[in-house]
Length: 147
Image 1 (tube, helix red, strand yellow):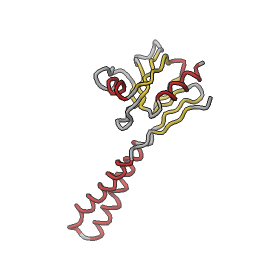
Image 2 (cartoon, one colour):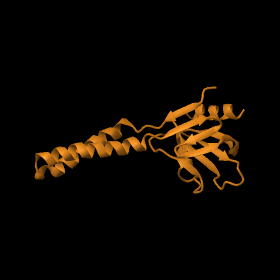
Image 3 (cartoon, helix red, strand yellow):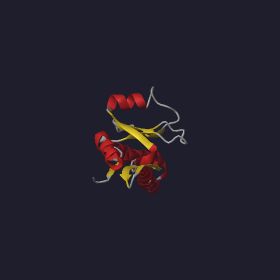
Image 4 (tube, rainbow, N blue to C red):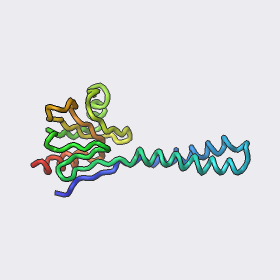
C-alpha cells in the first residue's frame, strides 16, 4: 500500500482575492504618486499571496505508522476507528456535534472529512477531525497501515 499524502490547497478564487487586495492597496496609495501605487500593488499582492499560500499549504499524510495532519503527528497505535464523513456529516461534526477537546484540521473550502477516534487513555482528545478531499482513501490508508 502506498502511503497517503494530500495537500489541502486553497481554491483559485482565493488567489483572485489576493490580486484584488493588491489592486485595492495600490488604489489607496494612488494619491501619494505612481511609485507608492506600484509599491502598494506589488507589496499588497505579494503579502496576500503569502497568506493564501501558507494557509493552503497544509498536508495530510499517513507515513510510517503515523498520521500527520498539519503540525500534529499521531502514531496510529493511539488511534481507533476512522470514519469517512460526507459533506453533510462533516458539517455536523464541525458545528453542533463538535467537541471542544477535539483536534480539528479544518479547512472550510473542503466539504468532506475524516473523523478518527483517539484510543490513548492518557490523551484527553476524543477524536481527530481532518478535512480531506478523499475521505475514503484516507480511511483505507489508515486501515491498511494498521492491519
